Image (cartoon, rainbow, N blue to C red):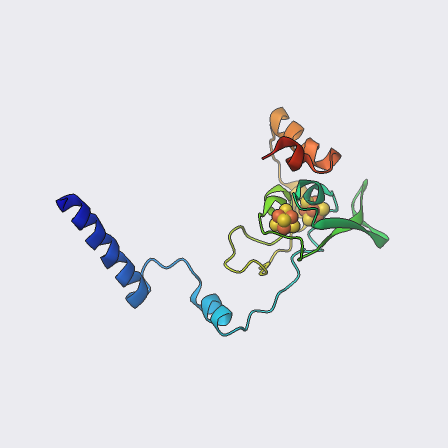
Length: 161
Ligand code: SF4
Ligand code: SF4
């Protein structure tokens, strides 16, 4: 019983400190104020420059909220690689599960994971040439996992993740 009371008191004290002194806060206070004052405008969720048009996000989305749309003019990303499509995200169908974000090899959707506001993409502009210059290793298992999303629509539904 003594232990329980101690835990309750410690928890209450910690929360008081968080509230009164903003200690241990992980929330960005500027962002918090902007949200409370209604100053956060929904921004684009797709960083179009970073996107390479692989289509995996669309296949990973459980609610079919992402539709790949053809570009008027294909964009040459690098030798032998053209970007022909970019995702269009339908906010009405999106449930903010972030499967698309977690899949995207370029972090081109929603920006950093766990942004406080689901409509805040944050700054994401990757340079594909710089990324391709970096040496990286990837296991055969990982390649097989990723390949499923690129090849198969609604893979998540089939796997019941
Ligand atoms: S967050 Fe989830 S529901 Fe929304 S577009 Fe991405 S995968 Fe689809
Ligand atoms: S997974 Fe990322 S790179 Fe691929 S189409 Fe979607 S946003 Fe673009």
